Length: 345
Length: 278
Image (cartoon, rainbow over all chains, first blue to last red; front, side):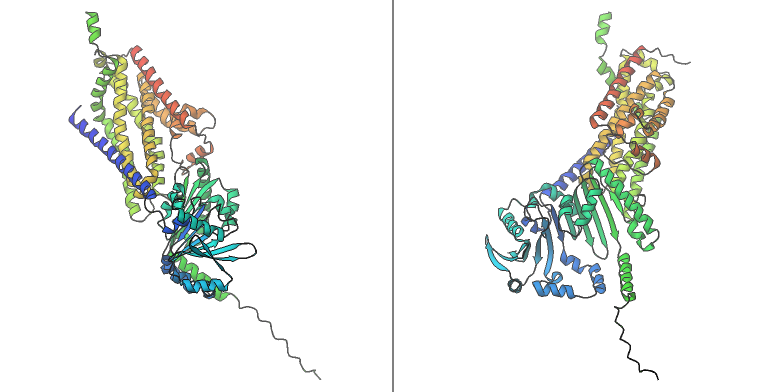
């Protein structure tokens, strides 16, 4: 074998070895991140391992975002926020830093609201007083004080499980969350399947990971839609969504189908919707940028779908909404009854 | 005397390795290598352009107006550029030339007059083809992968690259063996090879029924982990008639093609009387 042939094969093998080494290292580091770090917020240690839905929102980041500042202009009134603060003593944007919501089959019935873990700075004395005024009864559970409110159908509980961390939801769910934290081992952070998805979406300031059938059966706003979709779409296992909200919105939805065939069928469905969106965007120039940002990807059983809502589109939509509100007719005022006229002579 | 001579004759394996050593350099520094370099540099250049465009914030590829991610672009390049074009093309050009070139150059006599089995000549040349093409194609695929797929996505898609590399090597082995047999048996093998790879295979894959089972592409495509890109009418028709064989079927079929082609090629070269035109 000549020297130049040896040199060529040395380079070729070198490229292969370097590539394989880099890829293996990247894979190893990627898996390690899942096992060691990048495991989402600390509050996950209260969520049981069999969680079927976990969602997170960095409220501080969202409240300070440019988009939120713009949205304030279009808010008709602050009555709802003021009412919530008067009833609970919590101003979400001022007091809460981050929120984790979770649901699981054992602790939360399909009709119950998910467990909410809110981290922030709370005036606990004021909140406790308000809870008592609303009929909450204090109860001690494994060293934590629970405020239990029972109505005809559900029993809710609120507890300051840590300094600056409030757990709220169905009483059974709050108790199970306390048990999970106390056990130290049965939390969702030990569920590799869920944590892999969380690791993938943890880069946004709001994200959610859910078993698709739990979405369809749960108490969430999209449950009706998910139920309808579940009947129409190929079998879906997990859904993960991540959003980064600043001046605009950048979001990625990741779907884990049951098998390769289902994933391919789902891709075809998404492609169809994208074609439809593109067709619609042809008539509305302001949506062109949004449609151009649509991104479909994924391999095997994974389907990823990404899009960006640019700040300019949000401005346009905000102004349109404002114009509609101004153009909308004022509530009808009953016309005064005609004054009785004097009989003509 | 005859016994002494037979004892000195090298074994089939050592003969094949000797021919392999001789052919490797010849094959690598032949004019065909320029063709192969051009063929394989095209995806690398495309990947480089795609990377630059991506860095500028522009989507390098859109299908029906939808932006395709890095791993998606890589999968599409594997399908369109490598599996459906580069691998059959290299198989045809190199495979058919293994013996045919020696006939055309009238140098086959020199090999046949050596004390080696004729079958070892074919086997040695086939091994040289396999090493030569594999060590050029696989690094090219590797470079394309790292240029196109963003680093954070590597952990999730690297195992698919390994599968792709295996499929490339298997595809080169299968096409090379089949066209090696064609080159050994037929007088104008290149034309037959081109018609088979870019005529028959393309047509049979579009036809409903069992005809596609008589192509190599059917079994190679059955192993590809990437979803078939629906970017054209051809893909759409293929998707309509999609009938993916199992991985075991694909691997067994390709193994049978390789073994049968080499066995028949060996038999053909040992029995055939080559008449070199003066």
